[in-house]
Image (cartoon, rainbow, N blue to C red; front, side, top):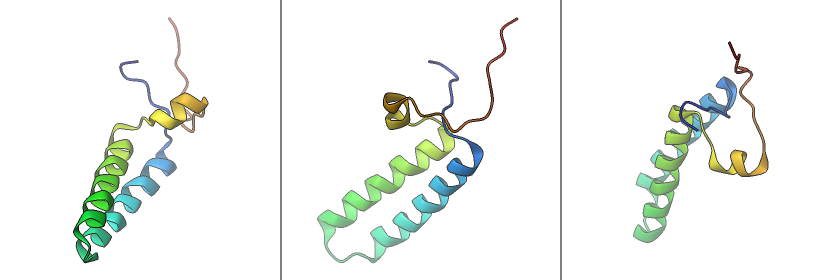
Length: 72
């Protein structure tokens, strides 16, 4: 599975922006436990956007990445 991507560029941009919004929200929440959960969700979403791979997409067989693998 090395090098396999299943998240397209548009989806990746949305995930990184969403991660930034969740990060801001984590710092604004007064309840510490919920803030940590939102922070973890932010980091997880950011990593999906950077890496380009989503485990849920892989389980469901979804692929929004338009790049096809060419065999030689």
